[in-house]
Every structure is written in structure tokens, then in C-alpha cells.
Image (cartoon, rainbow, N blue to C red; front, side, top):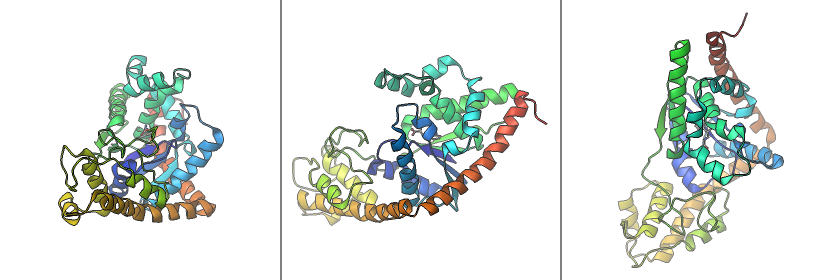
Length: 325
Ligand code: TRP
């Protein structure tokens, strides 16, 4: 299994429930590789000092959330040079047409119209290199990355046809999982890390008071019953969040909050979320203070990734006819 996240922006509780927690579960079943995708991050402008700080913070956060360096390789993408090398080689089997048709490339070109650089278009090819280097079977990603995993499949198949069996053809593993967490201010939209309204999203870095305040301000619906229903998107979203953090079913939560007013319900959701986040934040802080441990874990991860990736990369060089002794 292979997945990665970019060290940009803050993670929300939606990312936690939808992605991070799934990784933590999947590491039990698969041999996993998880990268902090810093080479991807620089396809949009980054402040160097911030990129460096965020890379460490994100690695510490993933560990704090339960990624276990004994079970899988957690590493920083740029520490393993095979990614950039395979990206170059895969560029030669990628058509400009297919790369320029990627939805995310088109979206980002609009959003960063003053910086449509080569890297932005090459982004999915680098991602294919990430995946294919490890003979990956499963790629857990959000739905927005599905098209990129499909490109990785196409490139693997094309390369195998042209040069002989080299890559495992990967499958996307799309997170569905019950709860899709929506904005606290407009529950018809997904909770997003880039929402302009600061009360719309709860971040994993929010302290207890902030978490509780944001839930207090969450929009609710008319009526006064804590009940899951299509015409009650605000309350339904809060129930989803409550259940995801409490580990209970909607029915159990509805029963628990029977006769309870919206105000007290919102307070309970806030406290439940804060109770999960507090120990994660504490562990993350410890890892960032005790620098040696984090350094050692990331070095170990990079070493494992280096070994696995070298095998594939040597094979690719040989198949393509590069001179090797
Ligand atoms: N592009 C992914 C995202 O933004 C991150 C990523 C980089 C990734 N390389 C990957 C995800 C390889 C899965 C597999 O979410």
C-alpha cells in the first residue's frame, strides 16, 4: 500500500476521519509506505522555512495519530531520490495531451495563473513514480486523487507493454467510510482546510477552547430534536462527527441525546472531539521537542523506502536499455 500527503495547509477533522484514521487501520493489513510529499508541494510557491517546519510537523502528526514506524515506512519523499529519477523516466511514456487533461492540473492552473510551471503539469507523473516504485497494489486516496491513480495505472500498463513486465498495476482504494464531514457553517459543503470562514473547519491543531467554541457556533436547523434527517443537514453533520469520534452508531447517539437541547448537544460534540485531539497534540509536541526520535524514525523510513525503490528503479533502467554493469 502506498499513500502520501503534501505538507501544505492544516489538516481538518475531516482529513483525520476520512484519511489518516484509514491509514492507521490499513497498516495492519498491508506492507505500507507513507510519504510526506514535499516534492509535490513545491509545484506551488512555498516559503522555504514554512515548508521545512510543516514537513516535520506533519510527520510528527502522523506518528501521533497512530502511524507505527514498526509496521510501515514513514518517510520524506525528497529523502529518497528514486522518486525524482523514476518521474523523469516515466515522463518519456506520458503524453502531453493526457497530462494536460488532468482535472487537478486545469484547476490549479486557474488558481495559480501566474505560476503554471512544468512541475504542476508533471505532478501526476511524479505521483505515478511514487506509487509504481514500490510495486504497490493499493493506493488509499480521496476521490479527488482517483484520476491520478488511474494515470499511474495507464503508465504502468503502457510501460509493461513496451518494455516487458516491470510494474505492478495499482488499484485506487477510495475512502468512503460512513461519515463525510461537512462545514460547520454550511453543512451542504465539505469541510475544507482552505475555507475562508474560520469557524467552518476544525483543525487537528485547534486547542480545546477553540474546538468547543467552533462547535458552539455551528449552524443547526429549525426544530429542537437531535435526529439524523435529510432536512436537518446541520444536526446530521454534527451527529456524524460525534459518532466518528465517539465510535458509536447514529441510533445510539440519537438515543443518548433524546430530549437534550441543541446547545448542550453541540457542547458534547465539541468535548468529544477535543478529548480525541488533546492526546494527539500532546504526542506531536513531544516528538517535535525531542528532535532525535523523529529524525531517527524518518531516517529509518527513508532507508526502507530506499531499498525497496532501488529494486524497481534498477529494473526500469535495465529494461529501458541504460548501460549498467
Ligand atoms: N497528490 C496527493 C494529494 O494531494 C498526495 C500524493 C503524492 C499521493 N503522491 C502520492 C497520494 C501517491 C497517493 C499516492 O492528496
